[in-house]
Length: 285
Image 1 (cartoon, rainbow, N blue to C red):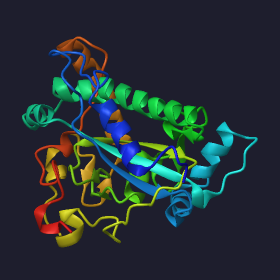
Image 2 (image 1 turned 180 degrees about the vertical axis):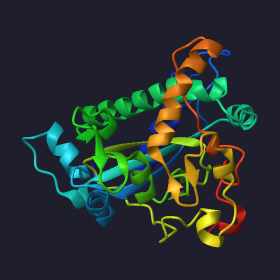
Image 3 (image 1 turned 90 degrees about the vertical axis):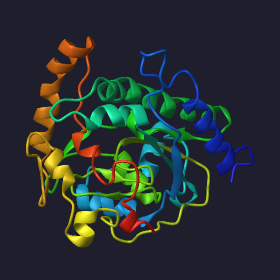
């Protein structure tokens, strides 16, 4: 392990940045877009990353490949790399507003989707620069020039890195019928990650089933996210990504007209559901 960095210091860096003025809705007196984060680690050689490539598509990149692209003259050992993942939960104010909606995003939700994700991008970049300044090679896959969207034969829309899948590997949550990641903070959240050339003890995953926290997959009940979807893009058979994407794109006009900024969003399946703010109590480990 690099003597300049350990897990507690890294978590403190993330927490301090989330508590800074950068975390902003850009309205309401600089109201924060996100609550306090949850952070986890997975190892760069975790077999799950190879499984993702096999399952999602050959285009899926391994952690070491992102780091090699940034530092082509250096050699890295996958088992000595750490993927740092974090969950940024929606605030109580945002969730309260969004529960009332049935067709379009609340203003707070749309702002968190745009300005909140801009902050998430800044957080990735901040950590990357800070670690590099300490002599630790680091890269944020979503900020990398080689990150791109792809077409998966099995899953349709995909990309060569997934923040949710990295979070799953780090023990931070499992997937629901809507494809959302159900975390200890619930499904109303965003995720981020960074790959670093340091060894930090990986989190133990408290689950083996990738649907462990979804009531429908565990006992055949719930499907509240199906009821919440205004366009019928979710069913017991899963998530229709194409229909979902078309609807989310359509919300841009609504957000511009009603809220006065260029934004978008839906996320109705993430609120007013049993997994909105935590793992359903029946399924908690």
